[in-house]
Image 1 (tube, rainbow, N blue to C red):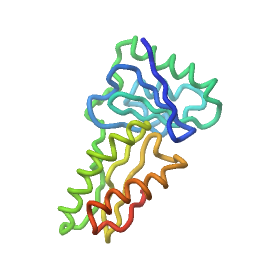
Image 2: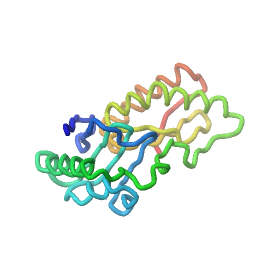
Image 3: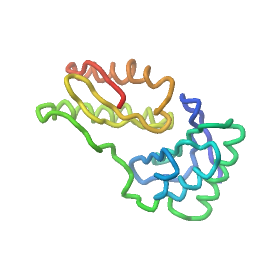
Length: 186
């Protein structure tokens, strides 16, 4: 088994590509060992000293470090991923837990068409690009011309995330939806 590793714009996060499906659909994020109980792979990764966060996409795993250097953490992470896949155990015990991003959304009923367009643009133009960097951005809400987005995986805490929001996503949404005035992270 060959696992590719890619840097992300977030220096605290590396993207691991096992060459096999990780999730059938959606994404999952684990921010501490307690939340990882439903995933044998995430639990295994949190057993490595220095691992602070684990994010699963359909074909990649992003790992965020707290303490430690990648040169020491990377071999242990690669080993844990390889051992997991060789064991034949599922990545998660509850595959239906994969999130589509529709959790606790807020917007006024009269903004439903605008929100539908925002979600379509995020799904077709933004999320695929962000997944390339080992993260995900999901719609959280829309109010008074402001779009609220939830940044996850490598995007969460990334130094360039503000630039991505302001210059990339905000400009894209404003171009297609004149009502959008600003984009903010949640």
